[in-house]
Length: 178
Image 1: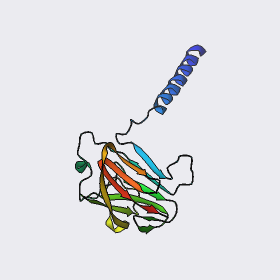
Image 2: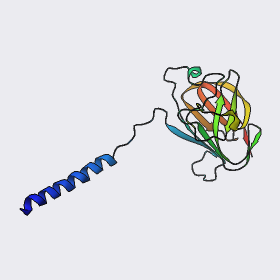
Image 3: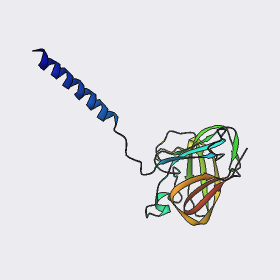
Image 4: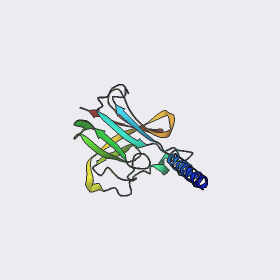
């Protein structure tokens, strides 16, 4: 009589353990617009960063830049959640003073210049709930063109602390000073 009960107990135990193992190994699929970060200084060996931008990288995939980041409309500066920019100390961003802290980075694309916006509402999806009343600062940044086309939206920093936004052949440069 004890043998069937023992077999049941062992079988049940293995079934429970096996089902927990299967559930624990479910991972989300790779995001179509993966999250990335850009920092200044750009060296990964330097832990003393001044600025960090966390954003998602949408792809053109045959679409026009103006379709994905429409001219004259507030854009989340990437995909998914609005991009976040962290200043680890008080800085000047586009010639305007900004206090150390974390901000949402929105932009308004234009033909010859983009409006750059720092907003205090940092936990937002896209620009759907963008609230102009929470803007910390706004300024205009010049645009340029490059011969190299970037398939994925990208943010990078130059050695002179200039932050660059790039997508397709468009480049936007934003000076940062201490």
